[in-house]
Structures are given as C-alpha cells and as structure tokens.
Length: 328
Length: 97
Image (tube, rainbow over all chains, first blue to last red; front, side, top):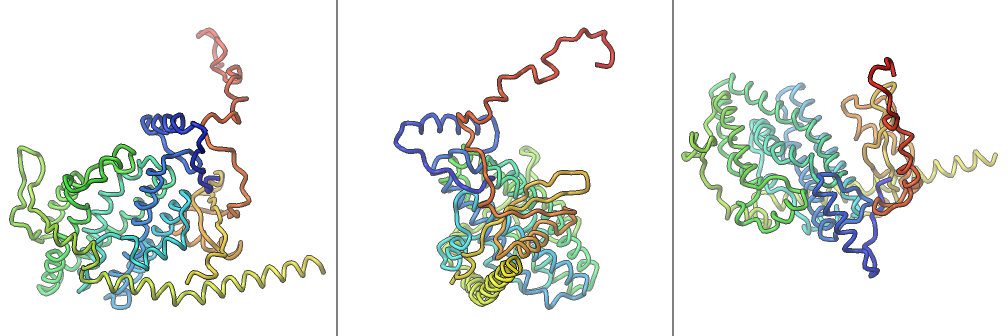
C-alpha cells in the first residue's frame, strides 16, 4: 500500500540512476507514486502545495459556514450544510494525500494554527450578506475549478486522484451559487443590489486567487517542469475571466472593471490589473479576517480535544471488553 | 494540543462502487478503532452514493512490494510472452479464434 515514503538514497551512487528513472516517468506523463524514489525538492514542494490546498479547504468552511444558521430557507440551509461539509471532506482527502509523502496530519494542523503554513488569500475576506454565499460559489469555486481541473493531471498520483474526486464535487458548489444569485436577481431591487455589491467586493480578490503575475512567481518554472503545476497563474486567470464574463451578462450584473472588454485579436478579454500590494498584504497576514480565521481554527481544534480523547478512551474500553469476552 | 489524536492509527479505505465491482482503494483516514474508521469512511468517501460496501484496514497491516525501480519482484512475469494470446500466429481465415 502506498503509505510509507521511501527513504532518500544513501551514498551508494544510485541517485543519478533514480533521478533518471524519475525524470523519464515525468517525461512519459506517467504518475509518481508514494513508494517511488523522488527528489527531496519534489517531495517538499508537493507537501507544501498539498498542505496549503488542504488548509484552504478547511479555512474555507468559515466564511460560508457563518451563514448556515441565517440561511433564508430550509432548502438553502441544507445546501449550504452539504457544501461546507464537502469542503471539510476535500481538506481530508488532501491531508490524506500529503500523508503519503511522509507528512504528519497533526503536524500540518499545528503549522496552520501557528501561522507557519498558508492558505488561500481569498478566505481572509468577510461575508457581509447572504449574496456573498452565492458569489463565493460562483467566483471562488469557479476559480478553484480553473485551478483544480488541470491538477487532475498532476504528476503525483495521490494528489491527482484526490483532485478528480474534488472536481466532481466542485461543480455542485459553483452551480448552487449561480442558481442562488439568479433567484436573488429575480427578487426585489434591494436583493439585486446585494448581489451587485457582493460581486463588486469579491471580483478582484477572486482574480488574486490565481497568485501573483507570472513574472513575479519565482517557483513556477520548477513546478511546471515537475508537472505539479500545469498552467501559469496568468493563463488560469485569463481562463477564469473569459469563462465568467458571459455568465455575468446572463445574470445581469456588472463586473467592477472599467478596462474589461473583448479583444478580438487575442480572442480573449482584456482586463485591469489587480492590486498586487493588497494581495501581498493579505498573504502576509494583514487581510480583513486573517486573525479571525486562524483563531477560529485554533479554538475549534482545542475545544475538540475532549472529543478526540473520549473517542480514544472509548476505543480502549471496547478493546478491553473484546479481550475479556475472548477469554471468557 | 494534539494529545490523543496522535494515537489514532492510519487506516486505508477501499470502496465497492456497486455490486459486481471490486473494492477500490480511495484514500486514508485516522480513527480510534475499526468501527469509527468505518463510519468516518462512510462520511468522507461515500457522501454521494459512491459505494455499497467499505473495507477499512490498518495501514500498518498492509504488506507491499518494494518501489518500482529495478525491482526484480515482477521479473518472473516479464519474460513469458507465450502467456499472451498474441504470441500465437493463426491464419486470418480461421474463424472464431
């Protein structure tokens, strides 16, 4: 089974051979599996990438989770519940994938709550109205789909397989958001205003989800060579804009970018430049909700300690009873 | 902070998608015991009717062949081409074979 990670090769001179084998596997577009030899850099980069992705799913439960108790109908509440539960599931699939590389799940959680590992900048923005739930589904999950579909072909097998599972479920997330917004757009003028306001607030942070522009993304080239990143940040951002513009038209909202227009020559939309200083500030911890998100995660983890302890105690008691039963 | 949790062993999860199919490995999880592993596996890996049966097994109980490079383990099957039907030349006009 693919759970133990291989130890680095010793000083017996086998490394160049192993490296060639690894390079050839990547070149053939085949998958690297947990027990295969892999360069330490590949392992480390992947653990960081998968852990950040997992943390994003887990922290991503919070902005929308805040609306579960205030959902306007039982139908919306059930949907939102299911969606937030999916985010938890996605986080767990990804922690499971990270563990196949030798990472320890408890250790990853600790790094998150101590602020030593990052998560997506988008979740550091507040959800001010119920329309935000719809816009998050539409923009944030739409952007996540752009990012994640190519990762189904990641060179690392367990990560690619987790992404297949996740992408299947993301489609529900995006569609429930868009449908929610369509419903609000058919409602009162105030409801339409709420949707436009949410669109205005989430548009630029959503474009920032794809990361800094290509010329300011130093690690991308190596990740592309390893096929753990399949398209550049700017390519994916463009894809997201092209995908979203016609959806916005159908919905009847305006995307808050005066420079946004179709460029016949390029066959793509031109659009304005996100505020990269803002992205850097949010990544460094100075977004509107960074403190709140991490504190909430830490509190949940600490307050859940007794549940974990009780489960352990219960399992020990059951095991003792079974042993007694076997003796009697 | 993580006391207790660290004692929870890792389980591998296998799901049978529907009757007639094999159980397939889908991922892993941590649980205090077998029963908890099964319920967690249900909640985590079969939220949309992905399965009709689940196996969980402690990861440490799985024995595995070694990593792939230069592994002589599969060599016995590599040099027996006569085990494949395409090894045999049969004229095109012989029917049903």
